[in-house]
Length: 405
Image (cartoon, rainbow, N blue to C red; front, side, top):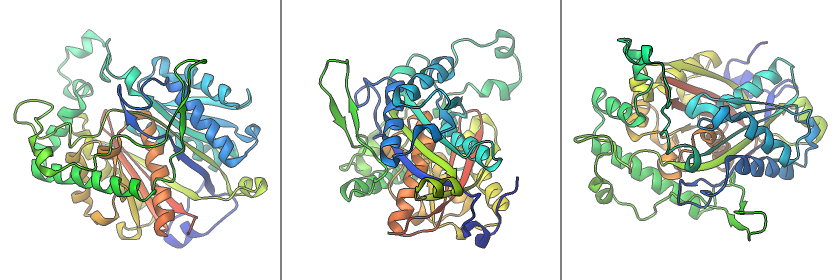
């Protein structure tokens, strides 16, 4: 298996390219009080799969494998995800596996399906992601409720740091890399303002409406809008918020990503299969990388994953038109941007997770869908999605836009 390298090769269209024919997401809503709070994760996943089938009119039998990114669900989410795809109409021939690379799980799901297509194990697959943080986060807050006493009492600090709350890792990044509270609040405000502009102008074309029904006999309501965006937010309001992770800290509820519910789905296939099915590609997956860093400063990881990706693809940072960086925290986002010396005007042009929310297992796909929508709107060719992930990991992937409005 070989991968394209260099901008001319990357932009060239070949029959064995891995293309994306659909990239959609649910609205992202606040955990516990948002529009999707009463929906089970399998209901959200079934809804986004149904929408994929509806929008593409693909015969479900062509979807050979499904990868679902999910972080918090019991038993790895495999059984509930299998229930969801079958309920949505996929046949028993559509196999399924779940993926847990923490915050980048559904992005890794895209990579898994793409690798299957590159290696000709399959011609078409669906990469999805889902999280109901309402139902699966608050009991454990993402920390295992059972660990080995021997390891937990050891002096291997890196092993112990794996369990560090994410907010503490944000504080570590702030301290180690001198990221001020004022800069973090300004970054957070910009995220909300960009997201508000995108909502106002109907730029979130990747969103599909979701019908919510509490019981089989209750009335349905339609959720069609992200509900975490605060159009009236100000720097004064952000500055008034107390530290969320200890006295004297710099991370607050206002400059960190929101706890949210949502789902995403990316339908990938070979260009040849897309042509055979009469489906028009909206983008192309080129390649992806991962990088490891100390768990206690996990947020810096995109600053290592991105250079690996650029080296692998033979590109420079200035070749990239748009960047979608998951805003786990303003602290780590700013460090990555400064370390890579990126143009702020090219980053998260529709806002990011601080404004939109971060439903862990769905976020990678959300970022990809948002990137493709923004590239199509602005007529840009190349884009990168990157994000940090708990336990000290970073993910980065390169995409080509194939829709020019």
